[in-house]
Image (cartoon, rainbow, N blue to C red; front, top):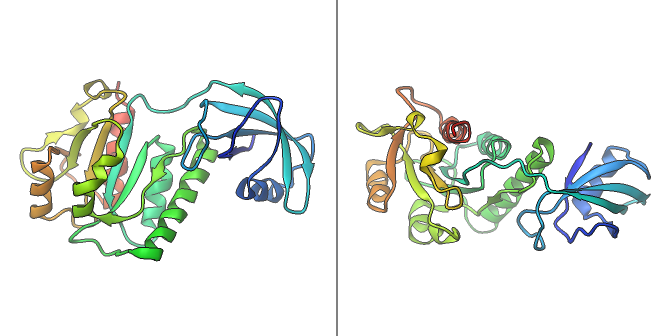
Length: 253
């Protein structure tokens, strides 16, 4: 059944107009009155949500308007046991799009794009906001596809120094801090388990761009409480490393 993110109040028995993005998608699918869809509304820009998802029926199709009736609420969640946040040095080209999509499929809680000493991609002002909006749309589409009912927040890109100074205040809790690193003596992340982390506070993984973080940046992170962890002996691409960390944690209990 097609699923759509609908950041408005969803009340069983009520009839609503779908927001523009979801309405356009329904029209592209050539759906008709009487067709069934699934809606969820837990994500950035949403009204307070009860969580889960709602079954609904298309009642009216217009040129640009789609009306649906909310039929029932289902208390279904498909999130990981531990909230995982990614703070990543942005890879260039389309690799960041791919990282956002796959991280959402794996159940990431939030993504903070970073500009570091070795970053190729540099964004600021309106360009940064447009990129963040694009990545947020990618996150929504990924959740619609994979069954996630909570759309992760993709923050606007900032420098590593800015994030270290103020970005961690975005968290309502104090997540555990882990630095993906190749430095000697780093703990092997594969030997960790989700049980080591508080389920509500979660964990934030800091990962560098291609070439990794500089020694000074790693030292800054460690001084701020990040514990260096390793993914093994192979050198992974920036987007692969972040996703490997997320996968390892989400698949251990």
